[in-house]
Length: 173
Ligand SMILES: [Fe+2]
Image (cartoon, rainbow, N blue to C red; front, side):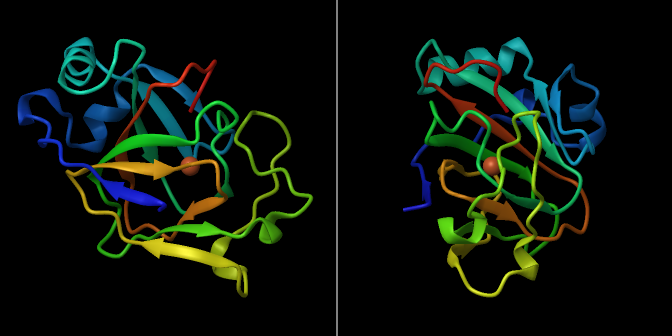
């Protein structure tokens, strides 16, 4: 299963930033060289809510913003993290798809956003190899597979979500 919605309450409105200007005003944690994808540190109040609500003390919480379609990638911390918990805040459009791809599609390519060389493979240009695609619903916690090649389809406007994970990892997106 690539996406699993969790039976967890929605985040209270007073704890969540819901517009791009507010989110991008937070302290940047990491950004891809082209600025396509950036993560931001979450405020303490949100950390406390997530920590106390249902995750453990090692939890990491980031806002993440995508400014356009993402190429096929595995998350840069995938060796320690196979799944993350996400909460989509701004969808980026009515039919933005999250897609997972067969390993054969990315054979011999560098597709981890780890700061080194990156081979951009665009999902729309590939024939075959699609494992699964779905339009992820906003404002619902879900568990997402990030160690299998995946991408985000074209956006109509920037997309924002929370990324939460618990396994030990170093500098992570
Ligand atoms: Fe990803």
